[in-house]
Amino acid sequence: METKEYNGWTNYETWNVALWFDNDSSEYWPERAQELWNDTEATISFTREEKASLTLAKVMEVVIEEGTPTVVGLYADLLNASLSEVNWHEIASYFIENVDKKEQRT
Image 1 (cartoon, helix red, strand yellow):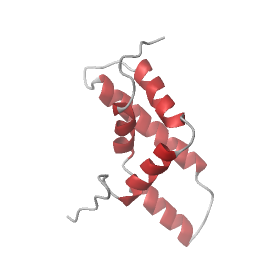
Image 2 (cartoon, helix red, strand yellow; image 1 turned 45 degrees about the horizontal axis):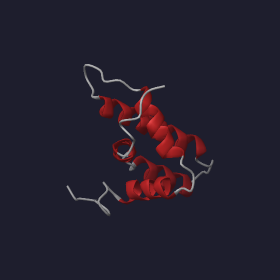
Image 3 (cartoon, one colour; image 1 turned 90 degrees about the vertical axis):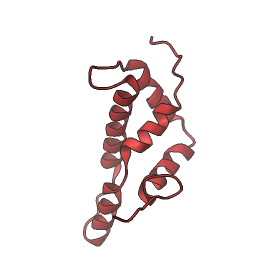
């Protein structure tokens, strides 16, 4: 199997989305990651970090899917193919790794 790693990320698509999320002038994703960290508890199956990362990954994917423009034909196929390659969990884990883990729940 060929490796698609790009700038330390799984592939170009993941790197590109992570870059946009991280360079966004708003603090939406870091704040959302912190909120999820604060609201998450470990379970029998997952550590707190794993559970928060899984939840954030799903939120990220849904937000992007809902914001995807309605296109048809070749462009739709290309856009959907690119989005299907994004490793949402890797991006979410990056944001969860950078939350303030000492912040107390409110």
